[in-house]
Structure formats: structure tokens, C-alpha cells
Image 1: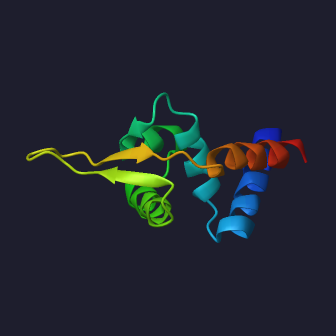
Image 2: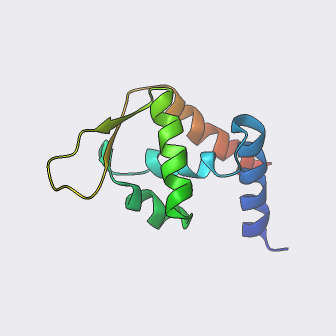
Amino acid sequence: MNQMATIADRERACSKSLFGNAHMLAVAISIADLEGDVFIPSDVRSRTSLAASSIHRLLEKLVEVRILERIPRDRGEHNQHYRVMSHPFWSAAERIRKDAIEQ
């Protein structure tokens, strides 16, 4: 097994232990790494390669705990925009990933 696969496996295992989902950490890190605080789900998809349905489900969980905000759509707007809320979760997620990589 190559080193990148091992790191990804550790990240997924850590995510599963903490969040009950193997991909939440990857989604959170991809959001934390985005420029600015407003994004659309395809921004996350391009960074994680996860299915759109999985990303939408995980984004909704982050909205439920108020670390993301769903921005109301304008009439005719296709893409749902989200805003990153100020929260210590984002820096903690980056630290968790770093620790998983360093194991």
C-alpha cells in the first residue's frame, strides 16, 4: 500500500471515529481550505471527488450544528450557496487532519 493511501485511510478512520462518517473530515478540510467564506457544493466536490448527494448530506449536517449557513437563493438561482460561520471547529478540523497524517 502506498503512503498516500495510508494517509487517506487514517483520515477516513479518524473521521469515522469522530463524526460517525468517513468523509466528514475531508469535507470540512476542503471547506476550510477554500478562499473566502462563501462557496457552492461543487467547490467541495472538486476537492474531494465525493458524490454530490454525499456532499449535500454532509453540508446539511454542518448547517444543523450552525457552523455553516445556507444562503437564501435568488429567484432562478440553481446553485445553493453556503457561508462558513466563525467557529473553532474549522481550525480543529485542520489540526485533526494534521495529526492523522503525522501518525
